[in-house]
Amino acid sequence: MNNNKIVPCIWMTTDGGQLSNVIAYYKNVFDNNFQSGHIILLGQTPSGNTEMCEVEIFGHKYSLMSTESEHHLLNDAVSFMINCDDQKEIDHFWNYFTQDGKESQCGWCIDKYGLRWQIIPENLSELMSKPNSWEIMMKQKKIIIEEYLQ
Image: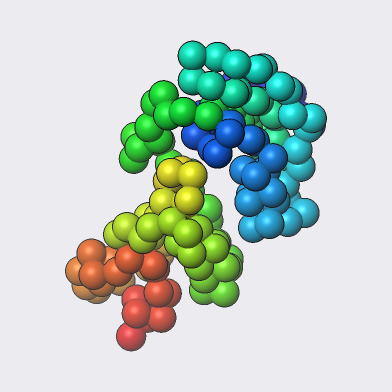
């Protein structure tokens, strides 16, 4: 894995504090663009069983931590933006994250672990320069590129 000087750490709550389920969930959607290190068992903490693992997604390093009981909720203050090549890629990520998560608005969704994602086309600034683009976006949950081109 690369040596990022600053590595975001994402703290999640999972059944039994088991991080292996989180790793499998993200490996499933990111496929070959996801690599994980070894799970570090931290044992019992005030938040119950706790585990950590370094992962790499699209070449960027993250640290994942899971605890058995909820300590701090994830919220909209931190989200991860996926710049998608086309509608097929938007659909892939959106459908996966919202299957057990929640839809939000303007390309935002929440996965089953509470992590916020912005699933947007890589040419969003170009699409937003089109007439009525703001009104189109405000009506959308998942971004539908075709609606900006009509």
